[in-house]
Image 1 (cartoon, rainbow, N blue to C red):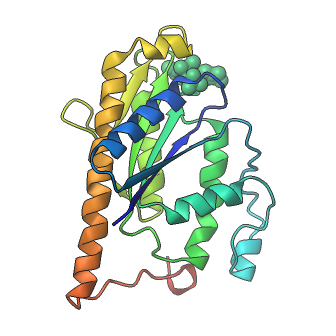
Image 2 (tube, rainbow, N blue to C red; image 1 turned 135 degrees about the vertical axis):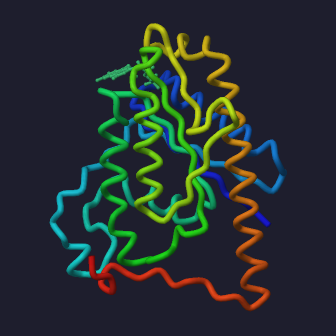
Length: 224
Ligand SMILES: Cc1cc2nc3c(=O)[nH]c(=O)nc-3n(C[C@H](O)[C@H](O)[C@H](O)COP(=O)(O)O)c2cc1C
């Protein structure tokens, strides 16, 4: 059974420590089994408008009507069994371009309610300060997963919320010096892929045995 793990780097930079950390996590994911397929998407050079709250998706029950690079990323996300999202820390949060991507995903609830329920996600954060808000970024990425039915996955004992990295000068080279953070990224990727595989196999077995999946209510069915 193929397990698809999608890595997304929220850095806009060419030589990005975050992109490297996400790549290491994907290497960790691929290391657990030859049937794990990985894909890396970097938001560098992508044009992604934030959600404008035009409500066209809500009125038309459609995916987002804005035309830019979002749709190709959504396609990849819909196919993935697990996610590794990494971001540089910007003002103790994830980057504006990642924020824009996340805001646009809201409409998937309308078209594919419950699509992500057995998907799993992990988080990576890279900061220019040792304690510059990496854990806030991990938490916010996890909040995104929680808002979209995606199960969250931490790392090992030493990186419970995901991998945190520190670049003393904010450069790619600086991030490469953080060997512990890069090792944590690798092991987060392994754990994420393992969990994605267990969930995918588990779902198949569960359905085969005749158990019912709880049907996630669509946006229109839920009274808040
Ligand atoms: C606008 C901006 C805001 C930033 N804010 C923070 C911050 O709050 N905390 C921090 O640790 N680093 C901060 N940084 C530094 C970056 O997180 C750091 O340079 C990081 O290594 C960049 O990762 P990248 O190479 O993957 O782009 C900021 C950088 C920029 C450009």
